[in-house]
Length: 255
Image (cartoon, rainbow, N blue to C red; front, top):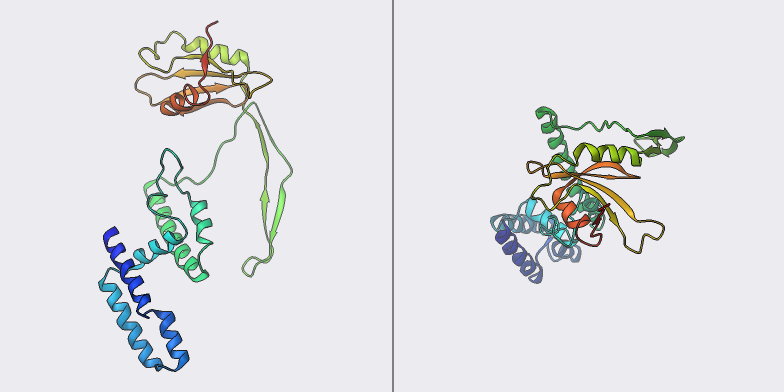
């Protein structure tokens, strides 16, 4: 718990001030102030004392992560920042000494393997196959990256660039609008079905156009279609906060 971790941290600082710890013991051994057996005995006594105060791997790992700015607060999303994802977590681990990197990454990989096994057993595992669809899909010539490590001397990874045209024509947008304009799904809602535009001056050539479709009271998401991006689904909160509100503040077309 947090209180045990704080108590352990305070004892850790106190122990360092009192000359305890592996570094101090190794220095004493090097200076000839104690024998190897005496140092080992003192080290075991300090470890047992730390365990009684709440020392375990989780507590030590939290101290390591705190040193590189990964805390319980930063791992959760807030209005001002997104949560720390796996990529940022691994990047922060690079700021640790190699021995600590190895401890944390090995622990992370073991938990990842367990989560994958559980997901496969319960049918929640996504094998990563995705259907790419659009008006036109083309694949460019792949680039090859070679790796010559100790375990993979001649392995190659192919990187494919896929061009997808997901755009929506004006005729398709109008047909979609005709299908939903009289269904009454937006009755009593702040999200009104219709065409919207973004007339901010940063878009110099033309205004950004949107078709927003309210899917009814029982749905937590709305359909948003754009000329270049095509049709997508976004949470109602996002539509209200970032499209109809916020910097965009889209305006509804009335003609």
